[in-house]
Length: 333
Image 1 (tube, rainbow, N blue to C red):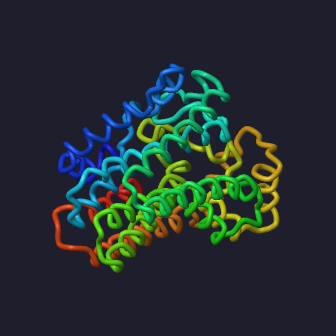
Image 2: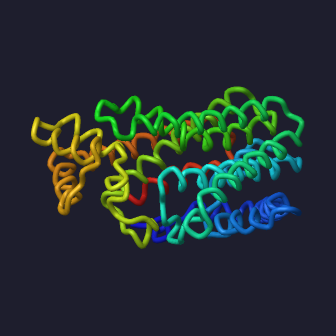
């Protein structure tokens, strides 16, 4: 089931609840992605920013600040910062992965070129740092700048880990915490920090974002092998073709016999893929229950996210964020 076909859509409830704040975020993003001297910057950025993404990460910052009683204007700056960091990483990711499609549309590197994608990504990172300075909160700066470093670290770790059959679930988790969960947890944590929430609540917000981000990425990796390409905007088996060792394959490799391991070595480590290999990979994932085990892991992380919410104030947003954790895994339920 695709995200947009789920029976309830907590991200839409959140969007309605945060309507005026999100409008302010979108205005700020448009203002700050402008460039007087390089018109290609807003062209490339607009292609991604206007591509109909759900703006989940900036909404998390606005939602957590709201739940913790923040009444100022700087949650908008922090939400825009989070979206800029996210967009910058997408531009760089598509170059690294040589991707041709994102959210069902051609990638920026395909429409322009790799140089434009890398340089515009750099520009957005710089813009993000300008934005995060403006609230004048050193702790917020520490959290977001740390997240930017952890994201880059996770991407570099993935380069070496993604095609190495020795990569186990703990290394996978480290990669996911870097490339995906770090921005989720920073987005939720800064909402509490800007609102001067008690430390226990800030910790709970971090734990929520961390678990939500991990569940989100595990679901993404699972859908690569059993999703609907119309709903996901990706082709089934893209990760296999790109020789990415994601959680379903890590589980299958751990359970494989000598012949099966030789298959994974040839297709993932050595990259010698032939017709019928994807089908055989899917058979092995099914044989060892790797897809179902991956699904259970995603559900378990979603449950951790929901449990973290219990430490937060009773508020309309709290229910929406709890539902959001269920919703992220609804695609594989």
